[in-house]
Length: 331
Image (cartoon, rainbow, N blue to C red; front, side):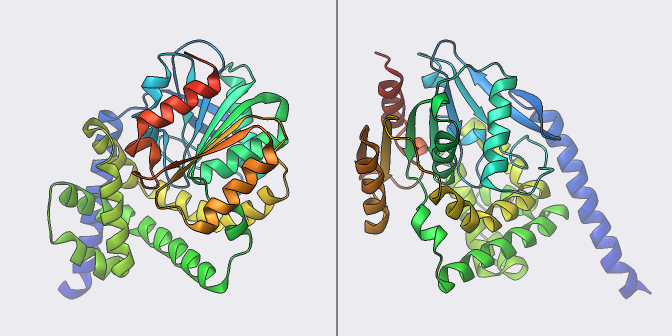
């Protein structure tokens, strides 16, 4: 009887630990912006600054509005700037509609109308966000004054995935789904807390629960968190201790190839000014694809940032802010 009850007691204790931690996080870390009803869900949006044009920040595939912590306040010094959390990420509620480019672009379009943001906008997209803002510009060209793409994902590569790439993507989806269960029972919360405090034993535990890639994912997550201002670290750890974020990440990863195929069929309107910024880690194929976008645009330029990796807005926020300032026509 003892052997039968022990797993139940441990699971109950873990679930209680997670529930208490989640309740504490809600008290400690309320949304810095406001929650807006959009298509049956509630999206968190943070608005700073005043003036026109409005700058809209679109995050990477698993990132939230917090990924703009180093650039949004600086942009707010010369114009209005809006960041938000896509459905299921950050402080936003889970999506009611399946994830697709039309659904995500429509949600952003409705969100901007409900916070009284007047077009035309400067759309800034990092990584997967670059795919979404290019699609937005293709669907609503008259609402876009300019695009700034920060190390955007390759549309060509993801639209035509090889079997090897699809296998890696499926592994990512499986890890995200596994993370949902680990987060539900407090294991992600405990792992992130100990890792952030410098603990060395957690990667071994994570390896047993989520495999070697699971341990690497947690370690990489903490590494990216440490590129943010220190006061933001607890908020990111709080979000990734919530099973909701892992469910959302799984949904976004699953839709990535179809999102790229959809985006490849939408032509960004010629004449929309565009700045593409590539990290020093960008591949030759990615650079070639971006050069092609610039050539097709007729009003674009491609900037290489050799001393920075994929998270340009965290590693070189000064260059990102300056590019947005130029696009907005501010001195």
